[in-house]
Image 1 (cartoon, rainbow, N blue to C red):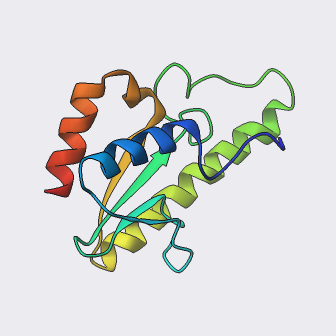
Image 2 (image 1 turned 60 degrees about the horizontal axis):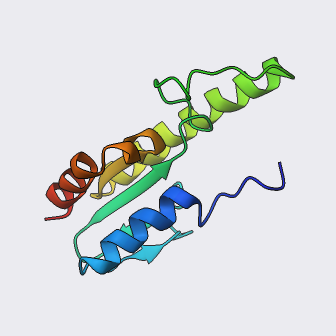
Length: 122
């Protein structure tokens, strides 16, 4: 569990590099906002969360895997993570932010991902 990071993950770094190269500027991990969003665009009023499929219980193949050991604990943890993510998104939207969640599996189709992100930010 020590090796699992919540910041500066591979998918997050990949998206940050692309955004910066295309002229988008952002703030990282604002602790004063619900859910401590991965990327915050204050001038645009937009937020991007970058979620790992397994840890946040996505409905793709990787997100639906169940651990072989300590199954009850991990299932409950992933459910709590999903509930926390939903509450954070609702709270941010109620405060006037627009929120986009990017899933780890979405990085496979780069063109679709970048068009989605560009459409969201512009």
